[in-house]
Length: 403
Ligand code: ASP
Ligand code: MG
Image 1 (cartoon, rainbow, N blue to C red):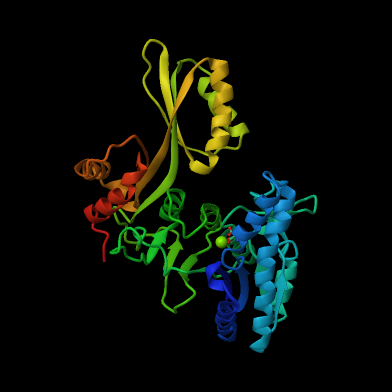
Image 2 (cartoon, rainbow, N blue to C red):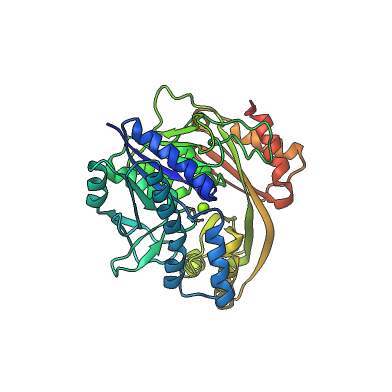
């Protein structure tokens, strides 16, 4: 008997009809002789709706209360889903994150899972019932409700799959799988059949939105195979798993992008030990996630330091910089409307010249590269936001990723 963890996103449970559709899918998996745990997101945009109400009442709602509020969205989904499954003649019970044994740290709104007490879930499955778990939430050591950050239900599912030693974690969403590029930008984009954890990590980190980054990290750490697929069809989706010999290693597997970057440049900071530590320490104190960092050669004892942050972190980043720049007596400039385009592929490791091909393609489009960063299987370029779509199209064509 296989143990299967399924995760259904907000669109898949967007209304009661869709919840009934999900119930049928879960029952079919159960009838096929599998033990099933289903993790569910909040219905449609209901998390956004809850956030909107919170912000109508307060400009900075206490994070503990935000978690209390946001965790209700997923509870609505699991309870309704349990009812739909009962209507189909199967036995299911719904569980909140804490009832399912999901333990987290105390960082409200972005908690990390620290452990899973799986007895309740195991007992449920062993008694022949289907277990339904509210996604995106857990409980802190203080017994407070926590949430895992936007998109966190993916992480709930992967963590449960790891804890239960599940055979597969199926992530049901409103797209067929992981694509070679955003099909809204490149209509010829193709569904990828198999991709390695490493590639998927880079893709999630550089803008592919199908999977939450942390859930991919988790699945790699515990070797949980992921199957990303549509809840509206029976077609196989994209398998994310360990890289092995048989896996075809494409030079470039996908082109990803973001349009939410801002670039900050500190001008002529003293080139001596401790400066970067100070600057990025101040940013860390404001909980700013810094993406790319670039420091140039110094001239006359000073150098420029540029880095990018997501637009959402910009106010906090500016707060930190205002403070630190005052102290250092330097100025900074802001490039607000930036984006980033990346190429990702495991085959890059053994092929020289891939980055050059990317730069040439961008040059032919008249696109200026502002910053570059690479890993062994990724090249990213920060460019003007207005040119991101052109860059994605041109790169998709250059590396022949179309169907
Ligand atoms: N409902 C939460 C969100 O919209 C969590 C999730 O969907 O995974 O971010
Ligand atoms: Mg969601």
